Amino acid sequence: MSHLPQIAGRIFNTPLLIHPQKLDAMIAGLGGRLLGVPSSRIQHAGEAAQAVLAPELFSTRRGERAERGYRIVDGVAVLSVSGVLVHRSRLDMAESTFFYGYNDLAADLEDAMANPEVHAVLLVYDSPGGEAQGAFEYAQRVHAMRGRKPLWAISDGMAASAAYLGGSAAEQFAITSTGIAGSIGVVARHVDLSRALDAEGITVTHIFAGSHKVDGNPYEPLPESVRKDWQAEIDNLYGMFIDAVATHRGIDVRAVRATQAATYTGQAAVDARLADRIATTDSLIAELAALRARSYPAGPTARTTAEKGATMSGNTPGGQQAATTTAAPAAQFTQADLDTARAEGATQGAKAERERTSAILTHEAAQGRTDLAIQCVTSGLSADQAAAILGAAPKAPAAQAGAGNQFAQHMAALGNPKITGTEPSQEEAGPAAIAASWDMAFGIQPGRA
Image 1 (cartoon, rainbow, N blue to C red):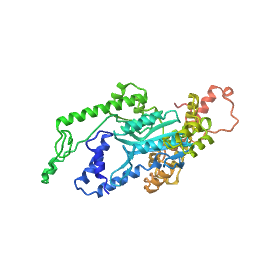
Image 2 (cartoon, rainbow, N blue to C red):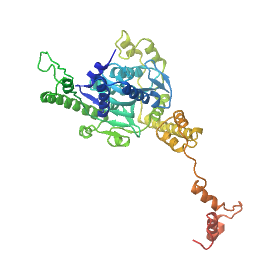
Image 3 (cartoon, rainbow, N blue to C red):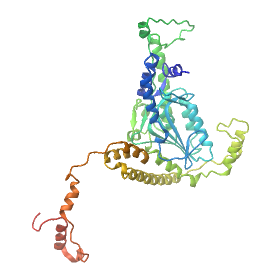
Image 4 (cartoon, rainbow, N blue to C red):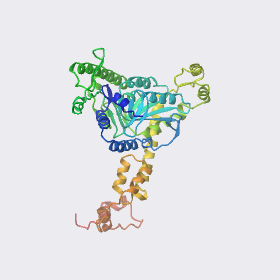
């Protein structure tokens, strides 16, 4: 069964909180199929896009998978938010893209908050945004969960528009050095097929009641009156978006509006106060994991609650009562706890980064491919991923004889100073002897500057 009519209804003639270039790409793909263009070329592009969104690319750390599919790493629930975000449903389409429902995102988050094995949650975003419907409700649910457990978010790739709206609702929002955040704006597209239908000799006749019933239909140019009505709706949503981000981030509404839906990369997002700091997914996991032993042990009380049938919404029979009487006490974190955890996480993250860098640069496949190995390091690839890439790449041409490291050649020509181990101390030798020793070490002939 084709999902094209359903997807077209979610893209055209409706307000969207999405990065405009992604929207244009989706329309280009859909437009070809709607107008009869062969889909073989589109399918190849879609499969490539899905490979890029593989969950393991977000982090080199592995963990157990919860029943709902998210990973738990050292007590940290890692929820990957990738693809285009929609109000409801989850559609995995080989010819288009990945559609992820706000309902599924909220259910995953609720489950992680209720999971006794989880003491902290990290939302990892790589999404251009999506539908306006459901986006604000999802962000409100994220914001309402602050304080139950540490709830952080990161743009590991892109958190644009609706994705940024949700991510900004977390207690902390970090960004990678090449991550993208922002696009705080609203967009809509109207498609006019009237000239294409005329060329095919096709006429569409509307039979309707109610003067606005067929507003924005694709079989005629968009009337100016309808455009004005839509613009008013877009402006209203834009104001809601700005107010929500200002509330989440604790910044002035005017500063948010001044971004004018621009996107910011890495440090620029921090400077614009759209992000708190530069980090990586692995370093945040390490920081959050360090909080567990101090402040949030998963005890038998929480397990008892889960076994008695408490649900994430609390509306099943007996679920709300169980959550009220037997739930584990909420974690209480002081600023000192957070500072200590951040320091420990930074140390662990730095150690992991050194080990990853060393594993890539010293791998046998890196021999003769130094430049590519350095690119693998700076791109954040794991050692296994880098090894696969290096192994498939040709080696760089061998350097010509005599064209080696000039510094090494120069040092070899100087020779080593004669040191016997019985030289007098600097105090005993005096200035003249020290100067002579210096000249000897660097090959300076007496009397020559």
